Length: 126
Image 1: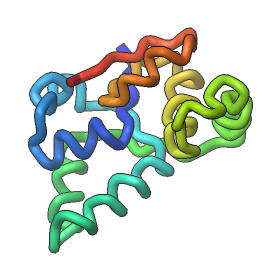
Image 2 (image 1 turned 180 degrees about the vertical axis):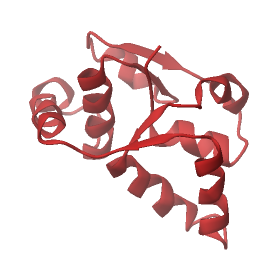
Image 3 (image 1 turned 135 degrees about the vertical axis):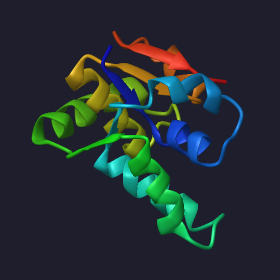
């Protein structure tokens, strides 16, 4: 199974939050967009003093950081009419685009994503 994690999934693992035990078994080889890596690292600055030490845990999990491609940019942009007014950020669309592009199962804590009507296997870990 091809797996994509969103920022909430990575943060839950790194912070050992509720649901981390559910997704950790899918971590090895799971994909994270480089754009969502920005989101993860930025949020860590708010909660830890040594961001690099916490990020080293991400390397040990063997998460694959995927470059944001032109194809994914088109997919993310084309999602706009679907998500407009639904509190879905650009970073969220980037994550959704990666999952669509890779025909992957997407793990998230964002319950609203399952209501978007996308032809995508979206799984909630909370």
